[in-house]
Length: 121
Length: 253
Image (cartoon, rainbow over all chains, first blue to last red; front, side, top):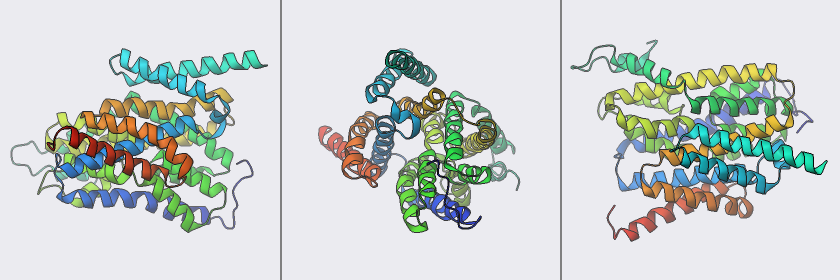
């Protein structure tokens, strides 16, 4: 990760960003626009499509928590799951205020991380 | 032409000519919000990662503005750092971004005024479809009059994107190296925020069940079908939920 990028030319990363980044991403949004043309908001197909999108994002969420990238992967998995659980509970208790949930999870993670550092070292 | 969505709505007979512009600005004002701040924090975390990977500032900003979907940006960063070729990198990013299609499909009927809305307006607005704006839209747009939804959503998306774009650049320049705890906390912020706001945006019980199923299936597919895992999680989890609910309701929708 710290080795830096393999740079053949200065413009190559921009080709990657335009084609593999912008095009590969926005093409799905455009397909979504055209595919929605004949769909009504309450149609059966759309309920299914929303189920698929919701499950997909949910899968991404648990992936980011269980298998994170970078420095967070050095924390124990149980701490990340517990922090998320505390955050989600706080979100419920606070009548679904997102900011309360996020702050509770962060406080638990940072507190737990700090305590673990103290105990281990 | 400077405010296309303002002029697009101006020929409605019983509305004042500034309606579209007004809703655009209201949407922009609604962007000053907790979700936008959380998203900004997540991108600040990304700026640190990009710098560590060796991306230049213009490259980091180009990815932020052009892709505008954090998971896909992270995937492309990984591809660039490992010297992946154009085709495999495109496939990897396309797989990470495929979720944007059903999200856009679910959103578009909500913002469209049948027979009036121009497709290229929808194409421009669709660029702002990412988890934050989508969740915000699913939660708030149904309460607005139909004509207001597209300019409101575009105003929200445009100002969140601009703000995050600027903050990512500032963070890239300002943060030489973040303390480990801060960097780690920023990485956890994104999934917890996604979790709470996705639950809040669920309008039907079936959405919530799909979410729980997706949470459970995500790690399973990640371990057994890495690369295609998100796609499978969505298709299998979403379809199973949909069919299960349909059977339980005895065929009624």
